[in-house]
Length: 70
Image (cartoon, rainbow, N blue to C red; front, top):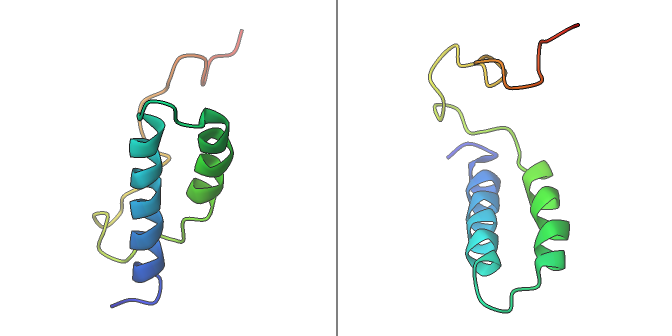
């Protein structure tokens, strides 16, 4: 297994658990808002082979408000 695979999978699992918790009745949404971005920012580089060769996550359609100049 690659060096970062275990960390990547563990962080993705925690993000999933946080999403499930956020949908429960009585969930502390302040906690979710504080922890969610921190977990996402702590994701290591994806393990090799997760994305196809040449995949560029920044390549894609323009979204509303992007790429428009008056």
